[in-house]
Image (cartoon, rainbow over all chains, first blue to last red; front, side, top):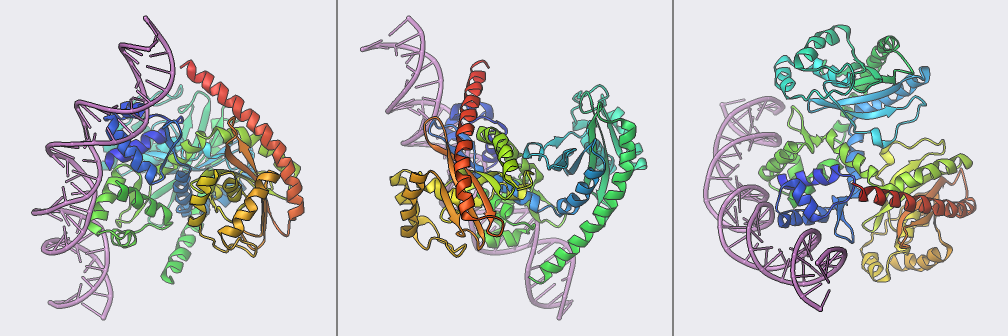
Length: 256
Length: 256
DNA sequence: CAGCCCGTTCCAGATGCTAGAACACTAGAG
DNA sequence: CTCTAGTGTTCTAGCATCTGGAACGGGCTG
């Protein structure tokens, strides 16, 4: 089972279809074994096998992502406000992200023109050490958990200002909590900047991040920091509509 | 493994998180077994377990759908032309679908306003017997395969004109092949109509369907049939750009 | 306190995964 | 044509792991 799931992830992570031998080499498993696993995955319709016996992920897997987004009430709660925001400032992109392990994953992305970005950017992983959303989630981790996570991060140098190590990153976290927003100043790419503010549930836990980003030739860090104050107001509105939506769902559930 | 994958599908198909006992009942398996399977699925990061031991699909599953769409060159090839089309006729929605088993699944959806529809409609299953795309794929199945599939369809009455049985549906298929497009006239919903034309690869196999749809209060079947002729031209353009893209990819692969 | 439902753990038993080896087939080289 | 090296597939034996019944602990509610 574990091997089968790892194999599924492996096939999913490679854009091109692969044959049994190739997959066996990548997975480090005997190919007869891989062959059997692939048969099960095909039978369950997670993978498809073409005429040349090459395997690719099945279209049916789209269903997973679809149901997933439906199961995020925070997304429904946030989208209208994000739409309104994007109309007010056409220089930035907006992103809604949720924690995934110690990193963050984007679950909605609005381009400056107001269009929902294509699915290519949905499900993007935002790294913990170099993105505004990632650092925001780190800053609100319980201390004990943080000390567990920090040593396991890889400090890939994504941009000129990427934090070089855990110590450097750690000094920024109290500041993020104090100001109520995090800033990425050319840390995640040579010329991309961004800010992110927390969205909390009733218990005060940070369940999502609302972020704005831009390229340095379209905006400045100063402008994004002003933007962060606007995002904070939006976040409060989203929290409200999230909680009421939660209640109506609970109410609805009671009557089922 | 098989049970584990079925369980993953089960969790994915329910919007709300569920507990072990509930899932065990739904899956028809002993709950100790389900518990163990869930642990594996959580370890592989396909599921998430919250504080109340309820299980939901993990955000990471978004990755599957994302890589999937990337692996569809036909989508990249078709989107620009679809964008152009939607600008010319603002009364219809456009859909790009690919076969999935004996049904069809949408992999791109353009609303009349030109926006890419939200992911909610991505990965939607278009039924074989009552949607224009579904019938189009049926019409181009090899005869031997068709006789296998037809008896297994469920002829749910989705709209006033839904085909009542296999015999009725089968008489329409030659017409679809002859005209080069399929029509759905209030078969898939009380007031939705649509047409679909095939997109073929170099070998002449139907690999995707390009469809237009509308509500009866916004358009008419006659108008959509005119639209079908336009779609056929678009389809040819898409086939061309798909094949050249295929070649450049092959070329690129050779040099890796 | 007793009863109920939940998630979790334990353990014996057998299913089915595991992996090495052998088979069939194709493509290319000599 | 033959030989080789590559592919996908099948076979088999052995044992890890799935399987599922039963029992445990812990919140509830009456």
